[in-house]
Length: 498
Image (cartoon, rainbow, N blue to C red; front, side):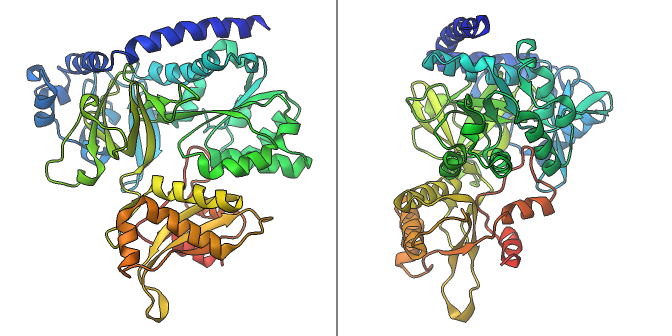
């Protein structure tokens, strides 16, 4: 065992003890965060506008600080971006993380000197948690690759602007720099397809032990390695034994990954975003990710089925229940206040608090009142694939409300199957529909009541989804394909490929 590997184990035990301390006192931990946030920002413009100095309880906070999304908070953010100080948080941000907005182009998410270290700490602790539980620390001696955006930054009124993954690249600790790949020059390549080829050129000769990134884009990297070498990834990189991912549910990709790798590897799931690092998988023995209650983020939760009510309840962790679908609302040391990040979660445990991401509050199908969410279609896909050992590359779902010849409306599933698959497509479709009906009683009622007919599958040609993402300028990086839509914008493009 190398000195670095041994040191990693010792440090992992230390971090585990610290994590247990706050996770075993969750309500006290969140109350401290709540108090710190209000006191620190009490003299900011936002704090003055919302009377932070008078707020003592969460109930008072909910009365004085409404839930906002980016567009609602934008008047304040625009002032920050224009160069003003002490608007949302004391001083000016260290960075703006640039993300894609759904209604008004780019969004600029502030990252402050208080919030930036939490992103780094959470990513580090996720790996240390894995080391502490498994005893596996040998991978720290191998090469590690993090598929991410360009680390190049631009100036925005004296503040550095870039993609979050590129910003984080500036904070890779010194003891990992010699192991980290790809090179700085390759990481700065903007075109994703060109970048992947350059990454492969650099990594093929190396002893890769850890690979990290959004599954859909890591899959593209793996496919190109197999095409180039004629060997499974696990043979090309015999010491590759840890895959770290976040952003999307890994289950729909799992079978394809095992096929490409040629064997199983351990994995760690993360829940990062530009707005904060919210959770990571802290154990392999329980479902869900540990919600980070000590990371400068105060959490509120609104039941998803009440989110669009006039005055929906805003719950703290003290009042949440396992299995309920919630919209997650955050207030942070980056100056985001009662901010709706758009993600929905469900708790798998409250001792400690662990969550799974169930989808996006705006990504659902309810054209006929069924309100199908991302978690349900992903679980249905997993169950149907398991029956016949079907392997898929990607999929999305959209409603078809105006079918031909007077047919009933239906859900149309656009699926890119593995090209070498041979299976009973009719049975697969029936299994998929039944799996969704088992999870969503509203959908089941609509099928039984003949308001909807069972789902239909449209096969997408190879690289069809990649073509779609390319046309909207979101190929690669941290961009994710919506798993389902309430309209046919994506569907129309995919239909044109047939």
